[in-house]
Image 1 (cartoon, helix red, strand yellow):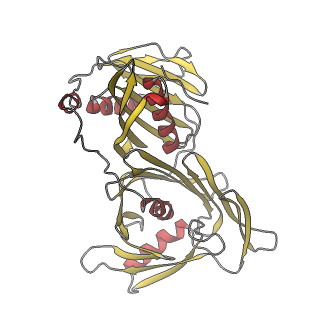
Image 2 (image 1 turned 180 degrees about the vertical axis):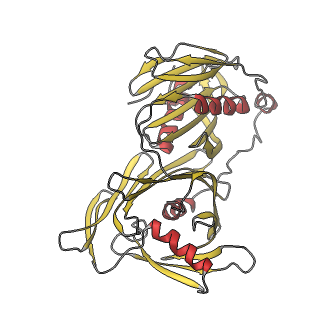
Image 3 (image 1 turned 90 degrees about the horizontal axis):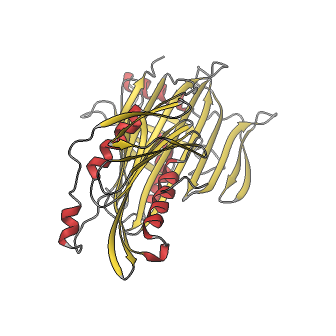
Length: 413
């Protein structure tokens, strides 16, 4: 039994840099595997009966399929398990602290593989079978499936580990199952667990939030969660969390968790901003932007293990995400063909503000524009609020599609 070991535009850049090494389909072929593996992969539990469970302290209520065990406390949350007549327990976890979604799912998957094999030395023929991303119950989620062989007692056995996790704010929910097949069964049970788990959440409610999915040549998946909240001082806090799973090859996975946070006046003036990047579980960047006592902009923090600080002309005004929405609305409502802006995008260049432009391309597609951000360009389609609905970008042989799949609230304040 496993226990826990101890803004769409901006995050596209990080994903593009990683995507150039991608080389595996998001669902692997079973070519070369025995016929019985093909057959076993189709096994499912047709009907799942769900039961409500409550933690001993009554702080959490959840819904599990089959015959649930009593919830057990663990460090940083709760552990749930149920017998669903699928050869192996259906296991779930509720974490009551903020988690890096891609890192979390990879760590748990690796722990499950090792638990099944008994030792990493017993694992062989590892293959990333499937990755997925999306929204469930208003939370962004990632999915990861590994197909592998295990050498034990002179025999070769086939193992299959499935993990899905959803995270938002100070909570994360994760489920896993270790047995070949039961893919749809597992997906349905995970969705029910996330949808029906109830717990106290004192996070301020955003006036708008959305989830966008990222597809990279069908070779990797990512998800971006963005929220707009009014803070106690009346300023707008814009928070974006991106998580992605990128196969380098059939047996090697890279993970990325990135965050951008900015604070803007209701009129659109950028006050300060933060950019954080976690690559394969390691902090790669932790940068911030703000004015010093002289009014000069300072871009500073850690990048690839090195501390840096750069001064930027204080007379320049970087365009906030809130103002970008207004620029897009005004462009499509007016007669101008394009609009320009300066943006703080440390993933491209932390030493200066990056020039950005938006050029209308809506002769055939309503509210479509060509966007240029420094060396990058892509085609995007916008909604009536000026917010990006979907976009397509290509770098060499790599194409990336970003599409909003869930939202609630309104950006038209």
